[in-house]
Image (cartoon, rainbow, N blue to C red; front, side, top):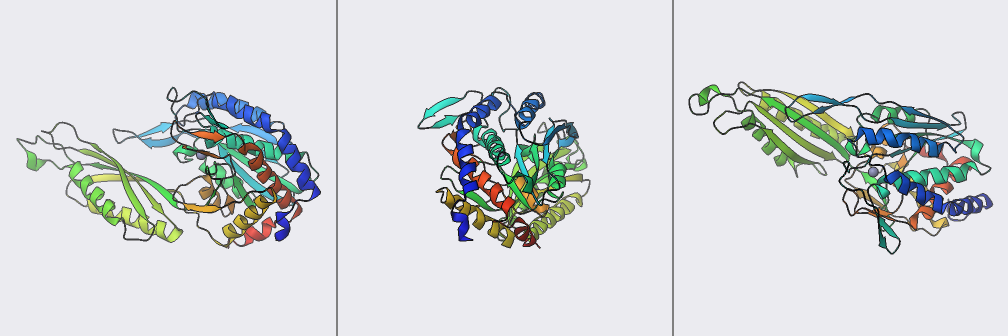
Length: 418
Ligand SMILES: [Zn+2]
C-alpha cells in the first residue's frame, strides 16, 4: 500500500481546495465557540444547533435536527431526575453509493454557562477558548474536508451518515442509540473529530468506560437512644467503596475509582441513605464483563446486609475499543495517507474514551482523533493550534478520496472486524 504515500492528481486538487478554505474553517469555529454549549445548558445547545445545521447545508446532503429523549440522572437525594438536552444534528448523503462512512462529533463542551467564555490569542498561532479544540474546531475540519471532497470527481462513489451529538461529554446517554443506528446503516469506516494531541499524535486503542451509581437505603434511628434499631446505609456503602478500591491491580488494565460517597445528615442520626458514584475502565470486552460482575457481586453483598436495600444504575456506556486487526489496518492506511502530506502520524493507546468506542461497538472500525491539534482540553487553558486546520482537513479529505476510489479498501478493513 505504499502508493498511499504519494498523491494522485485528484489528491493534489483536493488538498488545494482545502487550503483555500483555511479562514472560513477557523472563523466558523470562533463563531460557534461564542455560544455556550455546556452539556447541561440545554438552552445554549438548542440555540447553536440551527447554526451548525445551517453551516453544513452547503453539503449535498439531507439535514435535520432530531429531538432527543429525556434521560435519567440520579440526583443528590438518590432519585432519578430526567434531563432533556438539545437536538442531534443528522446529516446524510448518497446512501446507495458503494462506499459508506459514518462520521461523528459533538457540539457540547464541559464548560457550564458563564464559567469560561473568552477567546484569547496566546501568540505563536494558539488560541485559548471553550471548546475550540474539543471540538468545535473538529466539526469545522469535518465540514471543510467534506466540502472539498464533494467539489471533486469522486463524490458519487461515497455516501455518509453524520451524527453531531449534544451530550458526548456526559456519555452520549441521549444520543448513543442514534450513533449505533447510523453506524449500522451500512457504514464500513467511522471518522470522529476529537482533537489530536499537541504533538499531532492520534489515539490508538481505547479502554472502555463505565459509570455506576449505587443507591442504598437503610433505616434511620436516633443514634443515642436507639442506635441498634438503625441500619446505616453509609456503613453498607463503605464496604462497597473499600471493595471496589481493593479490586484495583487484580485484573490487568482494569481500574475502579469511587468519585463520590453521599448521604447521611446529622451525627446523631443513623443514616438511611447513601449514594456511591464510581467509574471503571477496562481494556477489552472480557475485562469489562469481569468488572461488571465484580460490581454486581459487591452490590449483592451490600444489599444482603440486614435492613439494607438498594438500586444499581449504570454500566459500560462506552465499550472498549482495542487494537484489533481492523483497527490496525485502518491506522496503517491513515498513517500512510498522512505521509502523503508530510505528517508523521503516531497512534497512542489511551484510557480516555469517546464516540469512537460506541462506533466500534456497533461493528465499525474507526479513527476518532481526526480533529484539530490542541491541548489542555477540559480546562480553561484549552487551546487550539490554528495551523492545524488545513493539514487535518487535508488528511480527512485524502482519506475520503481514497475510500471512494478504493485505494483504501474500506470493505476489506471492515471484514477484519469479524
Ligand atoms: Zn470531545
